[in-house]
Image 1 (cartoon, rainbow, N blue to C red):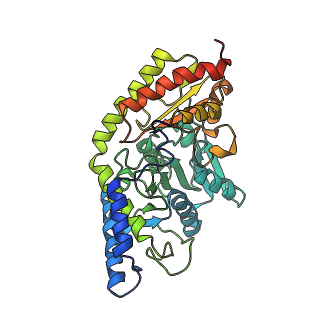
Image 2: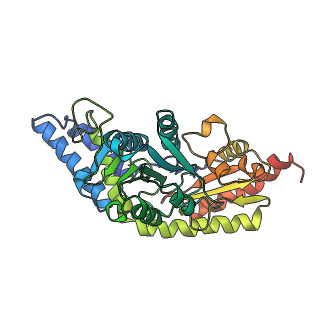
Amino acid sequence: MDREIYLDNAATTRAYDEVISYMNDINIKYYGNPSSMHTKGIEAEKLLKLARERIAGSMGAVPGEIYFTSGGTEANNMAIFGYLEANRHSGKHIITTAVEHPSVLEVYKYLSKKGYTVDFINPDSQGIIDLNMLESKITSETALISLLYVNNETGAVQPVQEVVEIKNRLNRNAAIHMDAVQAYGKIRINPGKSGIDLMSVSSHKIHGPKGCGALFVRNGIKLQSILFGGGQENKLRSGTENVPGISGFGLASEITFRNINENSQKLSALKSRFIELLEEKIQDYRVISNENSSPYILNVAFKNLKAEVLLHHLEERGIFVSTGSACSSRRNTSSHVLKAMAVEPCYIDGAIRFSFSSFTSIEDIEYTVSALVDIIPRIRYGGKK
């Protein structure tokens, strides 16, 4: 394999060199338990404080609104279960969408068996939820509205402000939870000012370490702990904190947001160039990602072609991509996201997600399209055009 081109950044990202160095230093020098009262513990506690300040600062929050978790999945579970358990009087009705990440969908499937009414709103062909349908579903019994801010398969960005305005007009007491794992670090979000009550983010999507995430909980929102023990994270999330990981997350956040505008402009240009090259050189495909989607994600469906076959042929060229969400791609089932968007079956099976990062170059894009030009006719037509 002469070169490696990593285009699966929506699954996970390569950690910044500075983050790896910083975490190594902490592992060697500041290995104390932050709950310990001696010097080593105090040093570790100071590092947690710094990381909390960095994450809070990145979203215009105060440090006390940030709770560290093991990642986006735990943050989503903590937000949903924790809120509903602590606010049983709010009602037993939940609104979400049919294009959520599995870490949310599976929770709501479970809750629907436990006495909750869950409405799953379908998106349009662009992946955007129907606001009229949302409006028709909100009642006085609606306790929670939960949305995926940026879709992990298509990059579709939901109209968050419109959702908040509709909710406030019809049921101000309902809480809004945003799974912002694919949005955080890519677009600027101030959850407090935006009217978001709970927001989940993850470290390894922004060049930080795996195994770390955070949940924003707006001041005044009550949550019930779903992990019991020593009472860490202000009694909401027990367990000895992962100081090196959390610290790496904090530094990754600082670096990412320092360059957020520059990266967005760069990747918008790369994504546009990718689409231009596809138009010039490839036939029988559909760009699933809409024109206003995240510049970090491009979903392309190739007609009458098996995505898994194309994925492995690309890997032989040193190009790493995905067929959809990394959390469900091994199940060999068609994408629930594309089905909900009413994408034709002849395209769904050939859908590939190309996802970019600040490390992606124009040379990577050109080499990838060149590989597609060579591979697709051979695997689609068996060597015959």
